[in-house]
Amino acid sequence: MSNERTVCGMPVIETTYGGGYWDAVTLCLDGDSWCALCGENLQEGVAGFGDTQEDALAAFEQAWEVRT
Image (cartoon, rainbow, N blue to C red; front, side):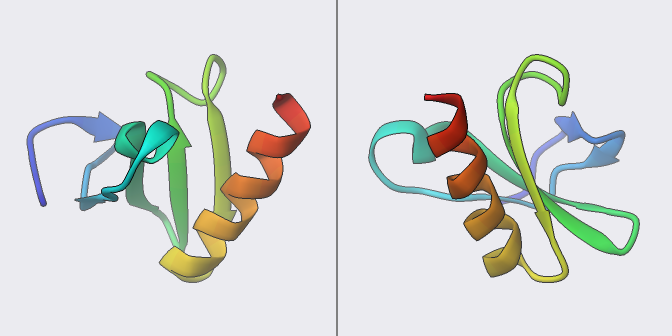
């Protein structure tokens, strides 16, 4: 689902859906990599990057576990 919000300096491409924190995770293309971000920006939020959306989400899950 596209909208006007930007993340990583790029327009949001897609937002994931699900329960819990997944409702707040945004996927965007950042150069050649996908970024999965929960939060307003990279400095304050939790993020994961990967070559595919699935890789970015897996990296996000690892970063989320480390942070919590």
